[in-house]
Image (cartoon, rainbow, N blue to C red; front, side, top):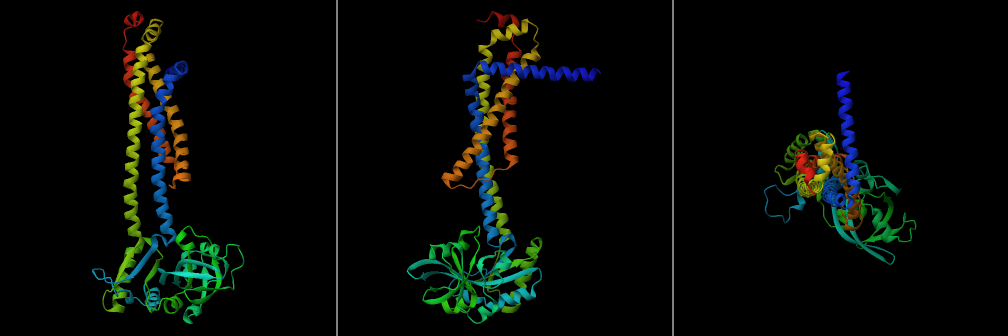
Length: 406
């Protein structure tokens, strides 16, 4: 019963302190507004900066996912320690891709690739795009379906068929009126190719702006080569990607006799990029936190001024029975309430600023709950920390001296 009464008294006193704080803030709107500003801009900058950092990180993840994700190994031509990059492109064959896929465990598949920027022509329209030679496995391994038509087959590649599948951006350029492209012929360079399919829109713009043809058709009919520019290897269990990379290296050396190739591990690159991006995000957060610190100093200065201006009011409250703890609680409550209000306004401003930068500045933003909760909590904590000195000064005033103040 004693504890219940004590708790009731404590919460009642806290409620009274908050009520008095709100009344005081309402009677000094200009001062309240000035106190709010630092917190508002501090919280807004924290929220917006961290959202930009998260957005940039998510953009990198999306880009990596659209190009194979963290489960991709790229086999590139040329030895790892070579300083002469000329004439190294002929070290990878199309048969290497099939052999790796069949003999190395933990693989979803291996895709040989050739690519080059080439001029496309359809009737009076010309458009320069990347022409990618790939295999029939590409849509399945990339989980990238067609919007119209069909993808080419292994037989198309083995017979050097002149068939093509368009990315959506290429289709829109060659067929601006939205007419049916299937069955039409276009020129890739000077070679006619029949359009048999159109891909769905990808999150990767580079994919949308490409034309896909059978890898052997691209190599021999368009680019005059008999080798792959690279082999893209898709790993099944990404947790074993480093072990799988070692197996790929061992197998390729056994085929070639020497290591005339280099392995690019997308998982390692993603880890490196993520670490760098985290450092940038932390730096942005630190810069924004300084703004919040400046806002806290502003709260303290204005609250100290408030104590001086309200010295007589404090004396009257003490003379009519208010204890030092009551005065301390009131001024602390004022600092916390104004900081909390500033925090809420700062959250709203930060979100608005983030979306404005995304709309007009091209930045990608991604708001998550944790940074927003952290920013608001820091704002309230700022009021508590920087409001304590003014509150303590108010509570330590001598009632007689305070009443004598004019």
